[in-house]
Image 1 (cartoon, rainbow, N blue to C red):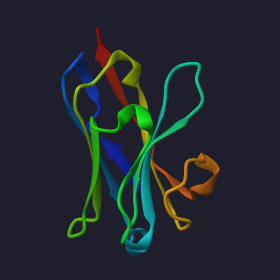
Image 2: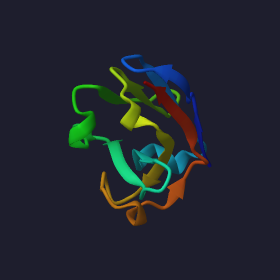
Image 3: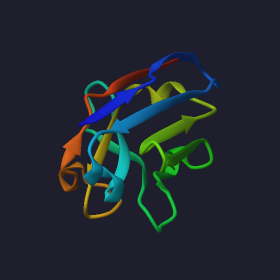
Image 4: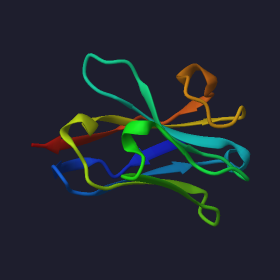
Length: 120
């Protein structure tokens, strides 16, 4: 029900956009967030967006990542600029009815993840 895509390999300082394509009308009213999980680490919140509220970002990506939502296509994008090796992770999109929250357990729907690798 959530399809993440757009990951890849990029050099430090480069840019990449990952996309989340929800299917089903119910997703249009839910908050959509991006989480990421690096090898050996816990899944962490990266950015989130919900209707009627400004986007929210974790501190380490503020000013570099931009989350946006295409209301027509119901897709959510995460534009990532000035990428660093520490951004390397599998990126997951998630949807939930409780708004943008940092805890993965607050989300009801998850995509399969897309790998983002930033080489130094």
